[in-house]
Structure formats: C-alpha cells, structure tokens
Length: 419
Image (cartoon, rainbow, N blue to C red):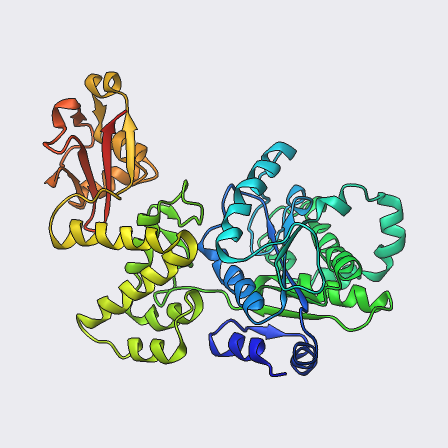
C-alpha cells in the first residue's frame, strides 16, 4: 500500500507538525480503515470556515480508505478550551450545547458518509460525543488515576496558558482542566474505537501531545498527532472573518449565495492555495488556474467559489449562486437567490430607519457600522446612494419587482420583501 493520504496532506498544504512522521506513514501504509479523529466543540449553532480545513481532511481520510471519527465536544464545551483565547468563553447550558450539536451535525453530512453503529471494517465516518464518558467521571478517581501523569510545570509552558499569564488575563481552574480532559478523550477513543491518530489545528499541538504522553504513561502502544497550519489570507486576515462577521457553514446562518461570494472575493494571491485546501480539483488543474493573470484570475475565483460551495451546499446551490451573481453584477439585475429578509407590511408602513434595516438584513453588525458604510459612500437602496442613516424606509420604497434592494458596497446585497 502507498502513503496516499499522507502525501495528499503534504501536497495540498494541510501539514503543520507531526509527532512521528515515519511512524504515522508506516501505520497508514500497513493498515486499512485506520480510525483518525478530529474534535469540534459546540460553542455555536454552526461551524465556520475556520473549521473547514479539518472537515476537508476528514473527507480526504474517508476517500483514501481510512475511517474518520468526528468527536463532538458535548462535555469539553462545558469547560471551554483556552487555546488561542484572551478571555474565558461564555458558559453554555446543557440545552444550548445540545442544540448547537444537533445543528452542527448537518454540516458534516454534506462532506462524508456516516454510519449509525461503529464498524471497524468500514471507512464510513462515525460521530461520538465526549459527554458520554466525561459526564460520569468520578472526580477523585480521575485525579488519582490520571493526575499523577500531568506536570503542572509543563502545563504552564503551554502557549494557551502562557498567553493568559503574560497578559495577566484571567485563567480559571475550570479552563486549566481542559487539557486533561482532551488528553483523556484520546485514551477513551483509542480504547473504544482503536483510534491511534488525532488531528487538530496548530493551536492544539500542546493538547494533542498531552494525549499522546498520557497514553504512553498508561502503557499503551504508539499513537500519533498531526496539526494543520493556521490559515490566514495573504493580507494577514483570519480565515473566515469578514466585515459582516464569520462565514458560517450552516445555510440558515450564511446563505449559499453569501458563501459563494466569500470565495469569489478571495484575494488574488490566495486563489491557488485555497483551491488546494478547500476543493477537490486536481493539483494539475489548480496549477493551470494559478497561472491566470488579469481578467482570467476572476475565472479561477469562480472555479474556487463553485467547487467550495458545491461541497458545502450541493452543486445546484453553487450553480444558482453563480447565476445570481452574474445577473446582479454583469447584467445589473436582481438575482432571485440573493439573501432575503421578510418584514411585515405593518412594520414597513410605519417606517424603518436605514441603519436598522441594514442590520436586520445582516449586511452590517451594528448601527455604527452602517453609519461608517454610509459615510464612505457604500450604502445604497434600490441602487441609489444613501446619505443619512436616519432616513426612514417605508413600503413606498418597494420597487417594480416588489422588493427593496439593499447594497453594502459593490459585492454585498440583500432583498427586503413584505412577509
């Protein structure tokens, strides 16, 4: 057998660090259906594009003949991962966590084939919830059995802890326990599902190494960790963050059209890299698209937008988004697939200030952001520039198509319809 999976991870830019490259390659070469897990906490109703690199790797794991394990952090979300955070996460109720988990599950179904019962002989993806074993832990027993294997001295050197201490930011004892619980997850997954590989973002390196060391001290056979790089744009912006907020993967939080537009608006210097990371186009195709210059680079961006949107929302949604974009930008029309907000006739007859309407439509996050948009000349209603954030919009502004078109700059639009 060949090292198809590891080669793909290297060539497409997914690799940051690995605890034992030679050992991992040997394992992947000699065994089929190797269970490989990636964990996701349930802090919001949807994952965003910042998690997409891990989801793509899970998809590649399955396509290469190995077994993806999706670990939902129903238990660890109650604690909160301090990695990369300047302050404590907001505490969520059990009901909030469960609702978030139920919503997130739909994202994974777009990218992988799942099974309901674990089958070690298949490469179907399997989803587990670490609350299943964490909720019943006896605290005294856990400390006695696993506490001696963790060094406080070492834990204090972890980047997630050092960041808080250097900035004199609050780090609760609750969060300090997160790395113990994540390490214990690896032990449970290895014991119950034969999982020998964990993958995570580069900010998870310390947590992954803790799990490997805990397993070793408990007398287990070799397990491995691999991390992916932090993805930023060529201008240094964090992946998945825009002026209007995070780019969510669930369609009810980010429409397929907005999702398509996010990829279409990729910076020129990022097109080739994002094609490798976030699509399944061949490396040969990508190499050709990378050579594009001038107006041709826009065709490469459309290829990226179509391929990425098709994976997350289906081919039909990608085609509709492209058609809408063409109608709006090239033909000056109004696309049926533009994000739409419905407002009651009574409310619209009474009048709504422009700043409130733009926030309601999701084009900006606050009235202040709308005012800055207007000051910069980027706000339009029915393609007419707006100069006053307090201007009241009513049902008399409905155009001949029966809608009110809102525009924030040249590339972000939304429609208002009467409910």
